[in-house]
Image (tube, rainbow over all chains, first blue to last red; front, side, top):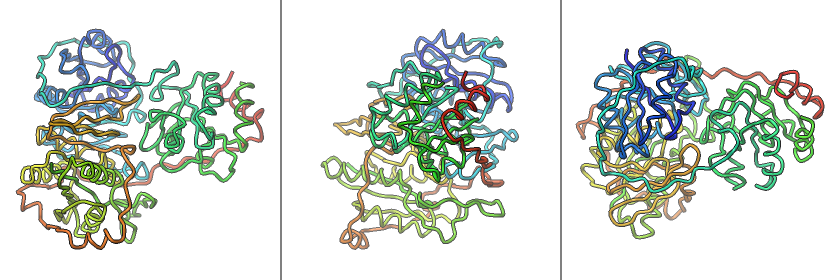
Length: 309
Length: 249
């Protein structure tokens, strides 16, 4: 089977999510990549080095600069003429594009794949991860998005894919990019952080986030996350949110501070390797999933921990 | 302009899903069912557009069993004008749903279709994008702000890392994210009034659409459970354990 993997990038570098999708695709067959964007030579060269990659298709055009689904989907549909499966990491850009591709190919997409059980059989979470379904598709061509935390990352070096330019399918004139507000931070991104320190509603306000959570995160070189309650209360911006409706993370170490452990939060972090919980309520559900728990007042415990580390 | 809002009847978001012992799925017998929360947000957004004088008529659609009628009545009580129920005995997949909705859109000619970004049962996150693809329209997905002006709609979208604002030519698709709005509750007088609002019942065959499933569910299981670990007495013990695990130096 020939697969086409969507390369997630920021215009200058390949994002880690791509590497997980490459691993998933390699279980199906030959791995080809698609780099779409404007001025993406460097990304294509980097992508070609990913271990196990055959061809790297590069579509360099203004129409693809902001990965608008209306312009990118027809490009993928064209390339799917000679590929059997489209595999994308379940990022917001791929989640936007892949179903449009699937509909244009008359294929039912399989979303958020957790494992590849065979060439037509996959597992995926339903009901916010409260159940895992094994599904089998009868479609000849496959369209998949994969849960990036469920697959090992392919090695970023060691491959020597052939870079090949593909013709643009043009601007469909349906949509235009206006602007974006992307948070800039010196801390690691949640998706790729090895350690994450997250705060909950118990922090009481945004200032306490800055005063307590951030110093602890910086001491550990960690990314900073939050529960939905903390985001809804306005302590931190939306993109901090870990959970069913936010980001799904699986770092080596997840430290939950003042987070009770609602189902919706657990759905986003329960696959972390080690979970550490600090909460003053000893009956908080977070302790049922934590490897290490400390019952105590976070306003005392967190500064002490930061100091002693 | 006319706004079309598809809604789905799902297990209520407060109910913990239970996997059936025979592994065929999640038990939906005798449990509370409600409108998919993202779809409630879609209905609310349509009503707000009508209150602003942008939308003139709101048509809600549901595809599913006869009982989905209750979900449509809820949308009518919130403020939608009329409803279409497309009955289906079996589960209809997002691709099938999108095909039925395309047929309805061809007939109704809405300028905007607002959908929830995903249903909280199957968590597919596909229908809006598929419908946009089939219609050849733009798709403002994961919306946290929607502004219609002239012949376009500007949508602020929740993306990895922050927000992105894109502009789409009308007619267009919008899918809702959680922070777009807070849906209203239907008042008692409006619930009473909703009972007399028009509700048409159709079948997939009426639209000439084949909705045979492409994906078979082989089994459904509970996810692996994590074991609870140990509680430490104080910060010193925590630091010691972190050092022993190689997390702290």
